[in-house]
Amino acid sequence: MAKRLAKQLPLKLRTGGKSDVRAQFAALCWRIKNDKVQICLVTSRTRQRWIIPKGWPMHKQTPADAAATEAYEEAGVSGEALDICLGVYSHNKPAKVGNAPIITMVYPLHVTHVHSKWPEKHQRRRKWMSVTKAAKKLTEPELKRIVTTFKPHKLGDRAPCRCG
Image (cartoon, rainbow, N blue to C red; front, side, top):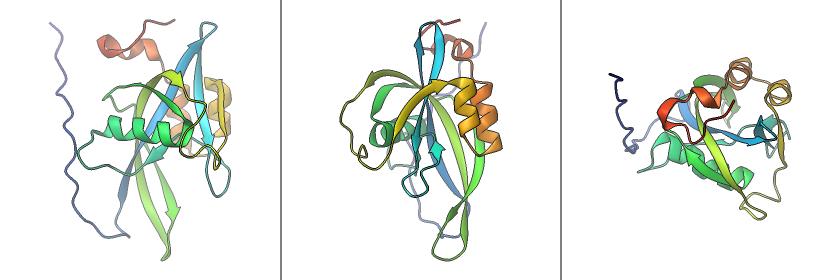
């Protein structure tokens, strides 16, 4: 008999210091096209680096739901987000006083709709690419590993599709 995972509850946010380690939630936006997994990357607003959509925790949203909100705002995609953390990566975000350390948790988002208009359309570029090409475009080693090892068909019973 398979064990059921506990359902993620929405977060209740508390205040913390700006120089403390902070958490972000990211969406690994994916789809199947021509029997191949494709990953959606966007450019960062300031340095125009290729990244996955990510943002801060949101009050009364699960981490996966917050990641899905960021995916819509930054990449103009929507779909089914799963409360399954694929992995964690770290980076420093430049702050007014030193660098703020960030821990980012990545959640899968099976994209079912690509919007032609979205909030940050004029600030970012969006591009679909193969898993291999997407990993090469990313700079964080832990995020590269999360992307290269991503297998949608291994998401279990909660996966939105059965793909090769």
